[in-house]
Length: 117
Length: 136
Image (cartoon, rainbow over all chains, first blue to last red; front, side, top):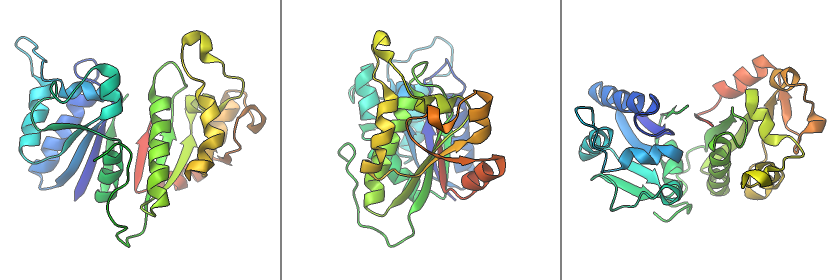
């Protein structure tokens, strides 16, 4: 099955980001295709490459690793601009781009799943 | 891709049915505002015949469309003003959960738009027929 994902909350404060990551990983393991993960609103903080929690899971790095497997990771450009997230700040394999990507993912997906508050 | 520009040729496939589900009151969080941005983008894709877009207001989401909002002292834009203009952007299917209105002592006369009122069964049917539901 082709699955699209949206993440609406940032790392650490909310469970949404962790749930989304676990979901994507499990779906891929089960043989599903993730057409893309769209980071919206505070979700754009998930692609911050400067996350550095001592002794803890590094949420940005984990997403980047999924991106390295070919899963498109897109953070909304408008929300990124609001929050000071630029392409230079983004983890490898994450792209800062437009809301149109969300529409594209919805179109490509058999199912679309949102993780938020 | 550039922000907000639909791309690609119409595939001939039926448009994806997309519902934006407004669940939260405005101003306390940005959810409502961001849902509005999604509606505007989806309107552009509807013009291309790629999606069919509707919006439903449930629970505290009904406060998004109440009249008389003035958030100027918060330094925020009055979001409710945008909803009556949505049909100009191809978004013209509005639904509201009747029980959510009643629970908050609201009627259609209190709203900036006139959505179709659905009961629980009607809302369940609306949700069931969507290809994608985007909660805000």
